[in-house]
Amino acid sequence: MDKNKIAETKIPPIRNGTVIDHITNGQSLNVLKILGVNESNIDSVISIGMHVPSSKGNGWKDVIKVEDRELDPNTVDKIALIAPEASISIIRDYYVAEKFKVKLEDRLIGLARCSNPNCITNKGEPVDPEFIVEEHHPPKLRCVYCDRILTNISDNLL
Ligand SMILES: Nc1ncnc2c1ncn2[C@@H]1O[C@H](COP(=O)(O)OP(=O)(O)OP(=O)(O)O)[C@@H](O)[C@H]1O
Ligand SMILES: [Mg+2]
Ligand SMILES: [Zn+2]
Image 1: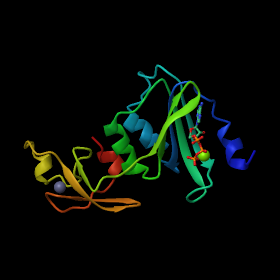
Image 2: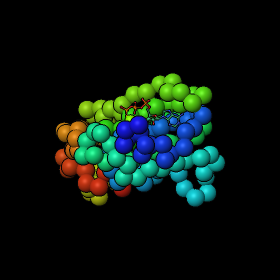
Image 3: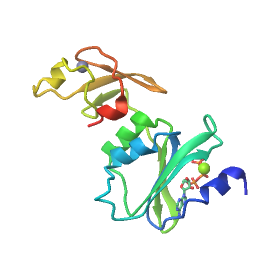
Image 4: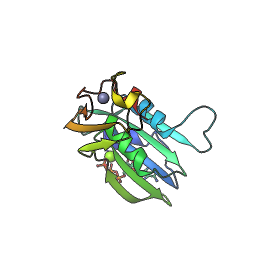
């Protein structure tokens, strides 16, 4: 077994659920936040690998394996914002039943709030925040309404 496979076997296999692999090193806690995981609502096994060796990227990644859960498209879009290289594998009966890479669209509506407090989207008006994705790796988002670049993406996810 190569060194990456050995590192991954430290995380127990799951029968059914979702593997979020190739998460940008250090971003797994933000992915957990996107998944809405907190101390009072965990009802199935969640295994987290942080700083796991990877043959891709800079050599390190995070991995999350969630039992008995599949992700909705909105959740996958948010993961793309903080971990643009992540892959999602749906596990059924121990096998990879489906696998895809997250994808950042060119225009995002309603996924994050603008970091400019004076933006029209933060004034209680019925306007959904909307961003143009100017760069994908790492994501650079420009607000359609006030032209500001979104700072601190993970703190501004909706
Ligand atoms: N039963 C399982 N339980 C937990 N994790 C699993 C299970 N089956 C596969 N995985 C994980 O799902 C992901 C996708 O599986 P796959 O076999 O495609 O991996 P891979 O060949 O390492 O691909 P990649 O190039 O994406 O790293 C990997 O992270 C793998 O460890
Ligand atoms: Mg792999
Ligand atoms: Zn704005």
